Image (cartoon, rainbow, N blue to C red; front, side, top):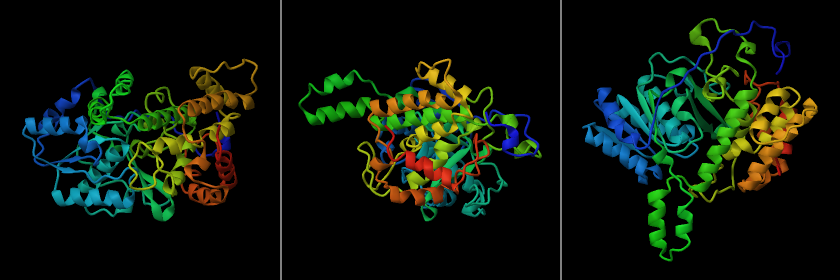
Length: 425
């Protein structure tokens, strides 16, 4: 791991905290959400989703449960996949005007992040939108009022948004993503229902034997709630969450030491439980470099996502630079990267030099990307070498200030990481 002296001479922190929502797990547990909202004595609940999820059993079961327990609610389904400041402001205004006192989010990270934002600003109606956005674009203020209660019902298994204090959004004017990172925006409760992300491969053998396309579609709608690539990119997001959290600097190397417990940041550095909670340990290079990639997309359309606009799914944008990132970090984090490579199935030589350990881990990542037919680098996402300077310029807003990164990077290093990510495998 990086030495403290190479990062700062300020006094480091000495503690970490586990910041997490209450989690309820079980097949069919979505049916209980109405009881939870009723127990919160909500007089007016906002149910948030997007237009695709609104047609799934997860949303229908949630709405049915709210009705069953007599909960008064309205639906906001205008969430944008990979939300922007504009799309989030639309949800914020809807929430303010409706005077809601409880929020339920049904969907993936985009839906849950949008709901967090709506609930936060509905609790603090006088705040300017940039007040709670992180630097360098926003003021990163502490809200005067706590966020109204939010229950998250995730329909994907990757972002972890249902348990974290982060909400990510795109700022097109800056060609980069940013976010709100506050402990107070973590959901009150996360309903983790395996039926909401149900995929079962054995049904694929049935589909190919059925000639009636309408019947095939009906079966798919009944048994498949997460399209193939949504599942794959969610998985790569999980992988990068784990690797970034594990290779982040230790919590007791992070500087400066907070002046009070309330000032301790959301992302605190690697710690004994960071494998279970990236929302506490945090993320660094893969995610920091992904934000300009997602923001500056112009021509990529994924077959398993809506084609209403060019879009690079979050997990895909994150894994695109992972190989280049971990090759850079290998000499610094070689012990942890060696352990990670072994856990992923690599036969790591005990004689491997620190600088060579990254190859084992990166070969595993390349193999996963190849096996799952993930687009091969920036070139297949529509970027050219001429776009690298623009990506690097935007990344200077999202990468250098990451306090838990194992090493400092400048624009030249960032450019080299994007260059190495033009083609990955």
